[in-house]
Image 1 (cartoon, helix red, strand yellow):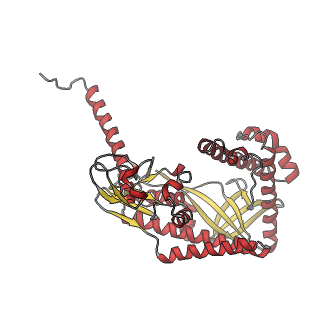
Image 2 (spheres, helix red, strand yellow):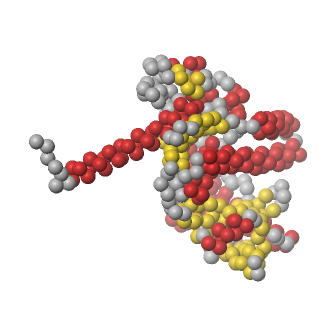
Image 3 (cartoon, helix red, strand yellow):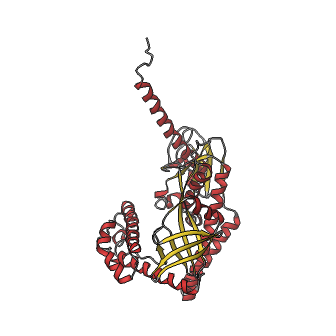
Length: 410
């Protein structure tokens, strides 16, 4: 089983080196935005076609090295694939809306300064005298022996794992360059010790239920909620001012809040995976969660606002990779439709099972009562158990039917 992680390293640069990386980051980002704009008419995701149309211009007008010019077109292709997926989903949900009609009015634009390198071509790493260094291409040539700072575990991954193509990013607030390096490592796969269904975002940030009989809700500590509310108030105040200094401060606040949010999600994911070591986590397929937000939240605006500020897909991703990395167990996603309206005891499905769309679940058929989020988590786990049972039954029946020496009755 393979696990892909992203290692983050800070680059220790001189003033002159920073300027060289700013030059190539600006050129690369401008090249991406140029192709994004030119490609708006065709909206092509074909890398070969983009290469044929824009490679020469990228090389001549933006002075980028050959491999980076190729990466520009790959980036544009990936961005348009994402846009097409978003457009198709929006058209499916709201076919006659203004958003659909205006979706392609303006070309997409990349705002952050990013450079995608190619490992062992435009980027490489080496450990000398116990210290790791990077070698990276710029418009002015190759810069070697760049000191890298980061978590010791990430350096171990550089030594022992398969390295992917690094991405150079620039943090404007601290005027610092970071290198994001994807690594792929092999972990031994294990059989799950239990099945844990996880329902996210339904008034509580998560609800979990296990085949070992445990079931519980995960709530955010009050200090986390207060800090989120603090960021919300600051955003409202700064946005109402609209001055240049307010916008700069708003950007700093946004980055600070993002780091805080990621840390909270790591804490929750770690709590779940360590509470159920070796478990197979069953998660919701959240493709439609934004489309169904009103259905989920009803008229509770504060609950809706709180829930929308927590990126549940990021939480799920953290649960998945922690379960794989530390315990060698693959997680699974299932369709969450009607999981909070279905009785796990008798199977009766009805909106009336959730009186006033409240937190209590009361089956209108058999009278089963439970917290609605717990019911959702139970049904999520049951869907994988039912699928596994069906697969095992088909295997068993197939084995019996295919045996020529099977005993006969009568």
